[in-house]
Image (cartoon, rainbow, N blue to C red; front, side, top):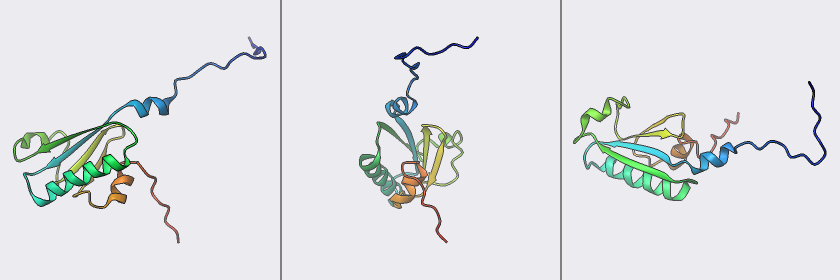
Length: 118
């Protein structure tokens, strides 16, 4: 059976996916090892990047593997410092002190990667 729309009939409303994603907080987990210079730098760089470039709410969890080494197994941490973005999916992993802001933004999908020009 084919049904025709009446004039002035409104279209069925769909939940706006981008708006729903904007309301979700990002879950960022930073693995460090003690109070080394790279660990301190990674924490400071992550906070700066989030404050300046995050369009949504975010939650940063800093995990010191010197105090809780068993937590490295779940996220398969092989190098430190390592930043894991669990939410929004897909999961992203960035290794290093996060000093290369442009690369971190691309890695977190906050800005699109530039196309290579030949």
